[in-house]
Length: 294
Image 1: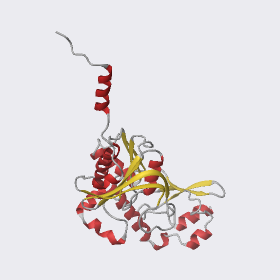
Image 2 (image 1 turned 90 degrees about the vertical axis):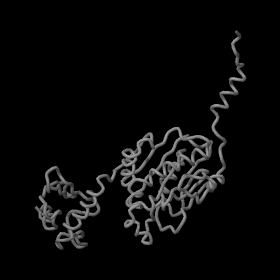
Image 3 (image 1 turned 45 degrees about the vertical axis):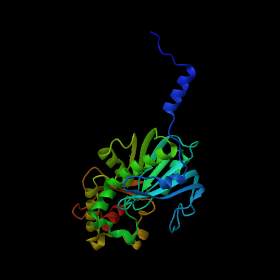
Image 4 (image 1 turned 180 degrees about the horizontal axis):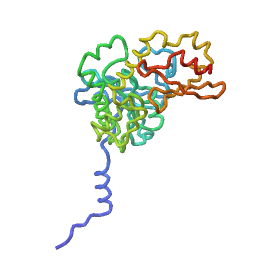
């Protein structure tokens, strides 16, 4: 019985057909992309300088961000999760996704971080987490679904949509996917690791705002403890007359002992300790002046 034979040329053709990715799409094609619970609103080629949409105040990025040639895809996931995916050209893409986090209460697309990522060769994604950082959209905190979106769902949905966009645009999935965030972005990274561990191959969670409820209750307690005692607030005159330049070179560090702070006179280089009244939650002006004068 004769054995079937496969020529080298036929094997090469078969291997190429098996391994070749689906045909890559154009940037304009992304506008027609159908994704669950999602509407693609923008698909445009950007090169050179990207100017964020909407009014821009003074500060970094107000003049735009330098970017290589990219396909910028923007969309909305129901109910109101805005997201963007930035895609370098096939030749410039390093084959990886780097999603980026937000800060504070989010409400914005993180354009500076997107620009850094695509300049390094990554495809990148960002989301406003389902609301806008504006007085006009302040009511989101009273909508349970949008609070959930801010808490964790928006980053997961952004990730799923970003991977789908990448697959459609390049004809293949990213080889590796990373999440990079700090502060609120750090918390978002921890949420991803805990709730959706398969979303990313690596997560950078810088200064994560975890134990969220406890943290903000602590901030409220500190504010109340400080403002409840009028004499505990440093005035401009206090800052101007104190030997210790509190604003320019802060040097008050909480020590390992409860309620004890290290207070430094930067002019003499001395470091002294002063006990604060733990119940009042702050070092009084009088206590600071007493230590510095001694």
